[in-house]
Length: 340
Image (cartoon, rainbow, N blue to C red; front, side, top):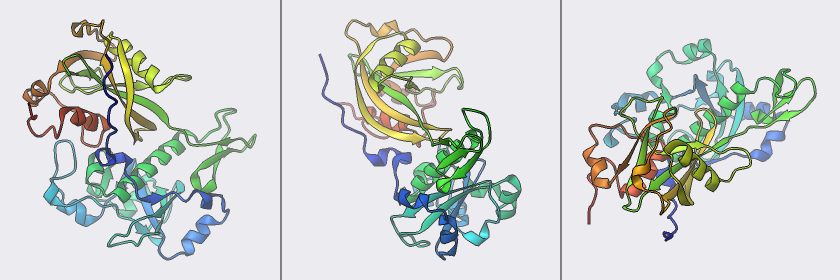
């Protein structure tokens, strides 16, 4: 018996899918674009160091640490420190990120933003206080739509540059072109474009509407999340769901359907949220973790998940896994479920 099609997740439930930036791709081909931007008084720089972005001193001072996120709601949001171009003296990579679509107290709508990836020395010169350098996983839910989009875009393209300094065909160095969105081989002139690796992450339910969670071998034993895996070449999202769940849990699932997607630049993925249900001929007790990637598997009702809240660690608030689990749960995991 097939179930009703799942309702897509709202964008607000996916912190890294939010954006308020026009990437302005048409401008990337202008040879003198950075010269033009540097002559524009309002141009701002997003400084990135070791995958972390500079935050405003005020937002850092107002924050109170949380176990899996930035701050309590009354502590105020996190905010990127977008700098005048003269504040950043050197960078290893420069990328035009686009123009903002909303105004803030600090920058008007239409502000051009350029990513600059810094060396250790440049970062220390700019801001030696490491508390000012924010990690996207930690601060994502506290950022505005504009800043979440900028930070996610910046980290993803910076990670791509770091892994494509040489041509995949001949091994010769590549040079950055097209405002940071293309690398060209010195030897044969071939162009290399940014790529993103799709991965499915799945809400698997049994006949009793229980949720399947697994513990990965790379995590502490008490951490549980949805099962996920990369999409292989020549494979649809739906086929990837069936294959991954069978490989990791030893069960067959059916009715794989799309729920939503979120970029996950750690280092270069987009997480494709899916739902699926246990096949009718598969007993729920047939779970068989692969023993290499997945060490333990458990079915949870909503009440059981709430009662286990002090024994297990669930996905952080910036992840699509958290949003998918809360979508099934019917609300925040910080509150008991509403049971009919």
